[in-house]
Image 1 (cartoon, rainbow, N blue to C red):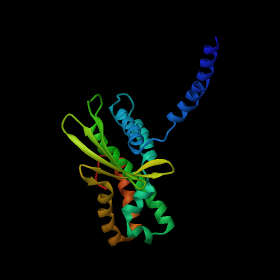
Image 2: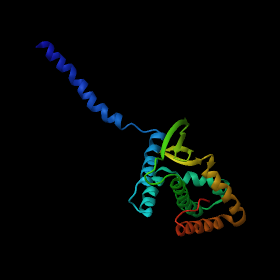
Image 3: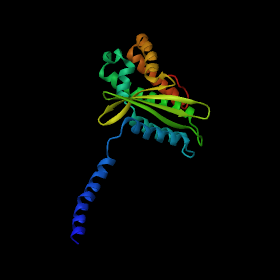
Length: 213
């Protein structure tokens, strides 16, 4: 009887520890690959699902893209030295327009590769961490070919945010920057903003089929 009583007392702290420790472990912060995987898998699932209209799919994907992309950081990188020359109003307007264009560009690229009821899926490769930044390698596996997509991410307020995407070796940031630098040299930042607004109007009228920034 005495032995049983002692055993019972020994089990109490173990049970208490288990109940306390389990929630804490489940709430441990996720790394960049885990956070990225959650968003990408949801995007792939939306694209592969028959039923929602293209407009509904676009809206749902937009929410996911804007949760994971750091448009302010990307805006700084795309404008480069021109970011320092821009006024506060120009910076704010550029970031807003760039978010619209980048979201549409990324979504249309993914739509090109993924179709309803297809076997496309994403495989997650290496993850490289360095001073609050990460590089996550992925492979979009399709029936026709495999497309390597690399995500460059930075840590901000406990979240890992994307600041550049390389699709088959082509950086979206560099692609936009090379185009925008030339426009700013010719027409200034206000001219660039007008060009961006026109591009957004074109995308809306053409259902986002154009891929050029």
